[in-house]
Image 1 (cartoon, one colour):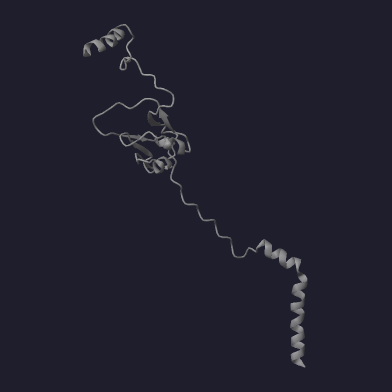
Image 2: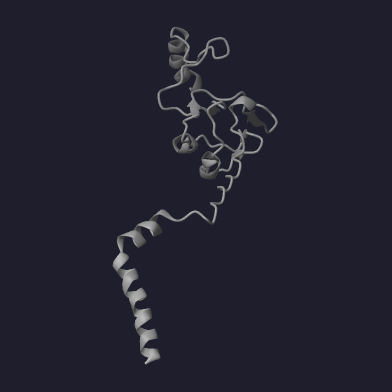
Length: 165
């Protein structure tokens, strides 16, 4: 009885095309919107660490001193949040998946030395101005108000005259 119900399905499948693909020989066509894996254009990376700070699984590490960027492929959940937060848009989700492996791998990318920015040097202190130089604002205020200086000078002789009496 079990063979008789399967016979119709078996005969129908003998004359149809196979449902499976020849994956290793022919590349698979990934559907629109499928998530693959993260790739980086390391030359455009500025090592700002926004991708590492926003990675929910903590799979990304950035070292500014070395100019390196690391991703632990086994920890990455392919959420693409790092690609949204990257200011230079050097991170991309690429359709397809990484080759399966029996060991836990960390991919490390290092920026070429010519694209790394030199460390910022502290700004030099401006040269001190000589003490003999007069301030431009002080000269204007004394020149604009000569009347204010006259009453003070006039008050001194009056007090001296009163003392003499």
